Image (cartoon, rainbow, N blue to C red; front, side, top):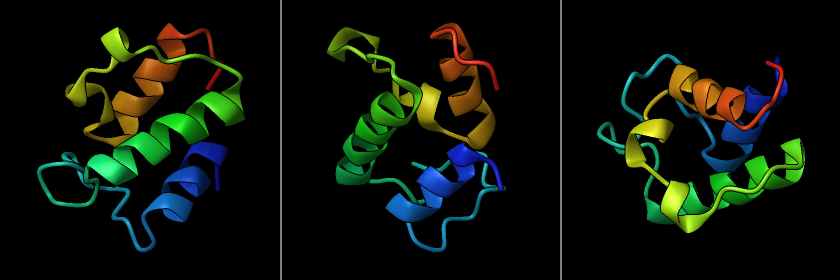
Length: 75
């Protein structure tokens, strides 16, 4: 399993990684989202600033991957 999937499963135990709307499906609440952002910053050595946080960037596994790519992370 890839690092991103591990991070998500540590933050939300039992998360459905196939979901296309983590937030709409109730899998990521505001607390989990902030934990996810912190974990992404730490794991991938990036910074995600407040003005860069767009809820749609965390809707699915693919949207998070796209966010990481924009930060220069090779996934």
